[in-house]
Amino acid sequence: MAQIRIPIDVLTSRLNLGDRFASMRSGSLSSRFSNLRPISEFLDVKRVNKPANFAEMQSRVNYNLGHYSSNYAVIFTMLCIYGLLTNFWLLFDIIFVVVGMYLIGKLDGHDFEFGQQRFSTVQLYTGLYVIAIPIALISGVFGTMMWLIGASGVVILGHAALLDKPIDEAFSGEAV
Image (cartoon, rainbow, N blue to C red; front, side):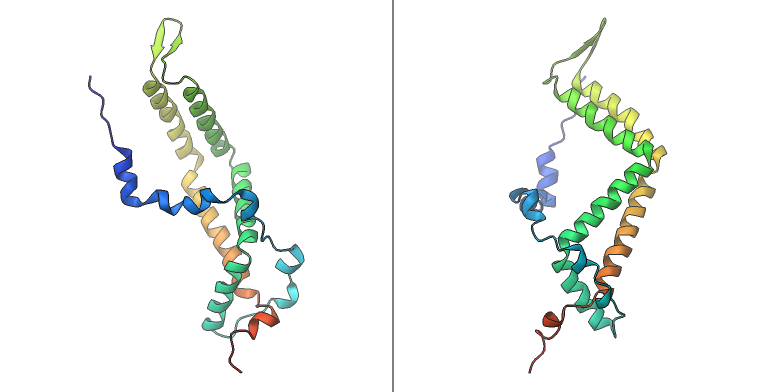
């Protein structure tokens, strides 16, 4: 039986995925979190107030998203961890897929022999996904992703809209 070959590079070149993630590959994790702001500055209750109009809210969001981007990345990561710890089946499924792909990769393309049976790597990957996809659907992966998007959006955009700029930044854009 002939195998079907899909040229992955043709599909990914149209989406330009390599260039989009090049900036993330070039920097280390420590450089990403080098501008992590102190918690006292991030949670300054004295600067929390309601914006006067939409333009002021937009200005606050633009400033705070750039200024506190590392803090927001930490919040998103914490929400991801919380989502995985509260959804055991999804956590199990992710661990199952990662360990399965690692073990199949350790075969280096050779067949896996189990008793009298021989399984190719394509059969092993197919078996892995035949097990993993139903578990992911049963675990409610789409609900967890939607919760994660909603919770992080409310927390991050809410903080960015309600936290006023520092005084020195508030007057830097005005003409004298």
